[in-house]
Length: 369
Image (cartoon, rainbow, N blue to C red):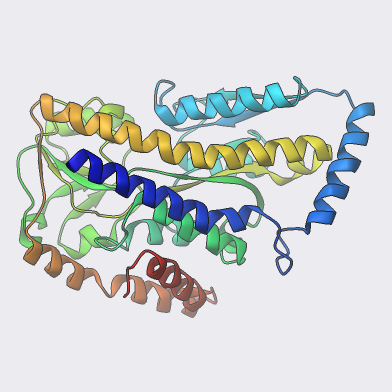
């Protein structure tokens, strides 16, 4: 019965994703980032004609953060192979996984400078990425699913509300992670008070965990295992799949499955390199990127389910605070997003507009602030 209910919920969620996102990938007459269907046909016709005389091969590199065997890395390999296939070898992308070209926090600058053509930009730099980092991690216990945050960010993008962060890049697609949970080695965190003094590794920052009195720590994923083993940190914030990615199955004794947020990434490209492509290759790159966004939602959900089942066989205990304690947590974190909004407005950024749009999309999921 639970499996059937889970399947129904997953189907409904995916249908909602399609309803919310499909219009964003199609023509919209009042958006500067889209074009009418007649313009699209004209562009495609022109691009096809240009392609007939342009046999140049374009070769680019992509910098990813996950290990080569991680589902997201495998997804990006599918993406690159599909692009090569549809372009008949005229657009070739070589993927470098596991941060082999630079750390995740370096990807911003590498793409701008053109030392890499494309990269996955995660929420690792709160000062440079205040929208990405804050919305990912300041709506705990409210987001109904990881793909909901993807929908929020697509709507922000098409309304020009992400220009301050990614206006200098060509956005190919968003990436989403499984919901953030808190994983610890020796202590359950059932109440707000249990978090006090806990040293927890976070991606970028976590105003939520700081509000609970935890000491937040940033470090590369490659250092997580040794830091947990030595007791340098007591746990970490991340999706359930991070257990496998960091190989901490035997150290992850307790996993708090309350919804502490969700990560969203930008797969971006250097704008000059994008503009160097002929029109037909731009169309192919955009279309395969659109398909990749939807494919990732399904792939990551299946992977998260697999890891959830696996960690329970290696001794991890999955638990969740009581309903009363979750209500306390929601109350204590309720003002974080609104406080951030005021801070953004004081800096001349569009905090109020972002706040309104986020809450509008959440309402479509039945979440009313």
